[in-house]
Length: 110
Image (cartoon, rainbow, N blue to C red; front, side, top):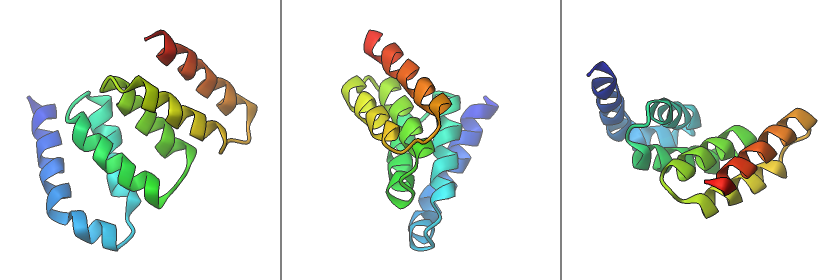
């Protein structure tokens, strides 16, 4: 359907412009693709590849949490939990800490 076509079109554009985006230090394009693909549960392997690029460029909680969610959906629970643990080290607000701990509990249960 339309979602499939949107992901495919966006994915093709990302691949075509990948090196340029990396060279320009444009982590947002990688983040948004990963977020978009994750929301629609499509092309998760590519989403993981792109969010890992974004995470290397901007080591922040949002990137780590999205990486954890995608890893979890791909059945890589242990790695997902590791990313959530890493994100706990970066937060400074109790509400974020509580949200991440809830995800850890959920992911451990499977």
